[in-house]
Length: 151
Image (cartoon, rainbow, N blue to C red; front, side, top):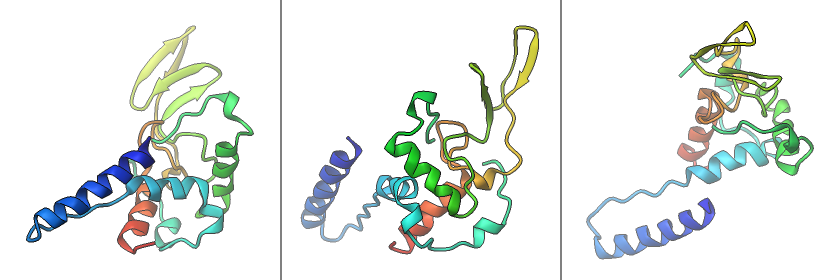
């Protein structure tokens, strides 16, 4: 769906450029950059690895159910372990999600008498997904470098 949306958007932007020659219109396909991070990272040279050695602070993508284990997407994401220290790309940095206990980022909950806190991880720069909905700062930095450097 995103690919088709972006195709139509790019076509429309090109038409607008013809209709409005003095307007500055910019089209950026963020989806392709971020999909590249997930699916092709093992085969790409990163545009800038300087952020890999730093511990980025808290500022997506995916909260994958266990049934996805072994899928092509899961296998592609596991390949990220070799890139820039992304350790377990199917896990999220902020929140507690283990053994059917789900406490979202910044929340606290008591389940069966046990207190759970949805705190952030110790190494956010090693995660692609911040909270299961949003990309981490490291993943966004990677995508921004790709977009800004024309990769």
